[in-house]
Length: 399
Image (tube, rainbow, N blue to C red; front, side, top):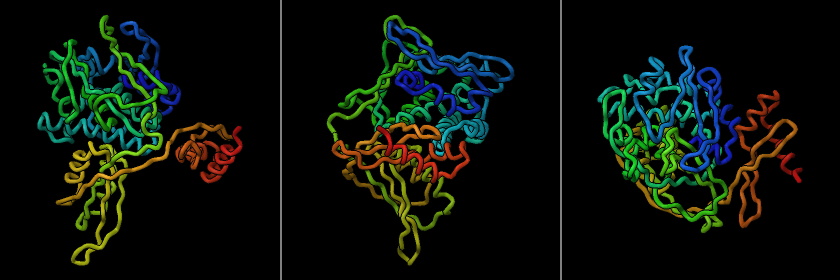
């Protein structure tokens, strides 16, 4: 439903297919079509899995969701462990940071299942979330959120539904145990619909990308999208809505961020890369390392993390679990950011997205997206710096 909403809001379907890479060619067929849900026009994103030579049609992860469907219909293909899922992610065409984000999301799922069932994480086999349609959902949403390029993502409190839900492990109350663990401290409530309205996959998507949960911030809406589920409730539209726009009260975006710091002088240097990946996956805005000289004349590393204030506890948990530090500092600061937007420029060798930054309405920076330049360089067998020069020239020559 989240992918359907972003497709409805303007995400090009062809770009999504390219990002899915061989996932959308060898393992499944994806499609999007328009439907009505309680009279609301919405986009339905669908996956037809092609496992073991059979075609199985998926259903949505929100609304009327039967956890046993993937477990039974996909047979052994739905019992994937993390390494098998990581292999499939590597066969997508996400950027390297996108692949790491998708891996981190599935790692969170694996850790939740391991904790609930008291099983070592390398022994966890993911059932419904290990099916190819769920893998496509997560790989696709990582690409879609990169396309949206939002500086800030806010989510409403989540209506989890009610009643009971059948899973591969038995009959569980709504929200299911994995959903509860993945929701963390996100605000939830129950409503009239006594069905599962937030699944583990839905909880994972919301808590991965939203930096805050609460009322809609003041904003001018530029795009709106509705993503449909399978079930059509006559009274309440079974849709997810996404609104994309600009904050109206911040022409020069200024906001509060939290800075978290600690010095480390006793950790294997190989771990620093993992720590950075985990912090970004948990929602950090910036992570960097600075060499410092510490007590007892030891060389050390200053870890600095910049994050939204409501993500501080998540950052702290990652730092304490993934590093050897026994303490840290944190403080809030103001920041001021230029207004930014992505603009696609046609060049003689193909389209390149530019990140355009403005100050008081005046363009002060226009930089071609590096990943686009790398892709065009590979396709045209030229150097990346030549593509950058061509792109800059095309930007300067635009009408």
